Length: 294
Image (tube, rainbow, N blue to C red; front, top):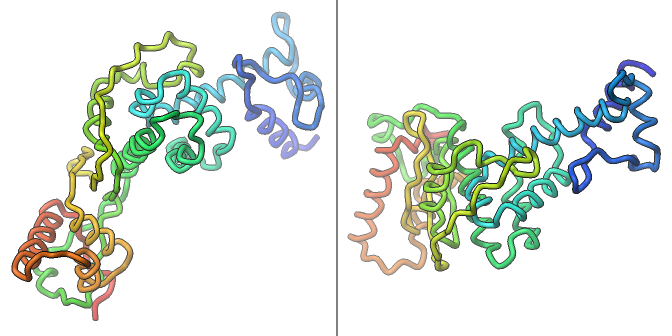
């Protein structure tokens, strides 16, 4: 067996999903005995067989990746409960194995995946998905790039045909529930030790938090970073549409028309609102230098 073959064999074995009881599987996907496979490169010792020695690595791999994803989603855990949370994290990771050198990226597809697997959320599906979207937006906002904002001098050069850019760390979300306050509260009150999956760490489960009743309501949210801290800012529908259009590459004129399509605002009210939106975005340094100008 070459070194490359050995590395591939061990990677396959160490990443093989555990049993529901968090033990290493005894049979590989192709029907071979896992004990025979690992004995080819792991020696037994006086205390443990090759299988038992390798099981330590297999469990620790899954402990680490389950913890890595779980730590990003404490509000989702509070909503669905510890049993469902453990099950959904493990199911998600089996379908979405690590493909990056960084554990940071492991949970990026969980909100989309969760929307397609309602068995893990029950009647709270939309609420759970919204919370997961906000929690991942916090991750993106925390370590997303920050570019130099548009200066006052640069703003004087803008025209209706200008294409602006937004800060990469700025995340724009249209939610079905007002989960932003819930996410903030859970993140503030959940110690790191209570965030990780119980299945991964085998710790005693924390008591499930009593969550406030929530009514479905359209919420437009900006999640952004300022001075190395992440903030949530609620937006108006027009503000959300205008900023989203700018992010999609619309010109200033096109973004404004998109934001106010169907609006019953008077010309004076619309002009004042546009000014407020750009003033607010500029104050928070959300707008960066134009990508191109006419």
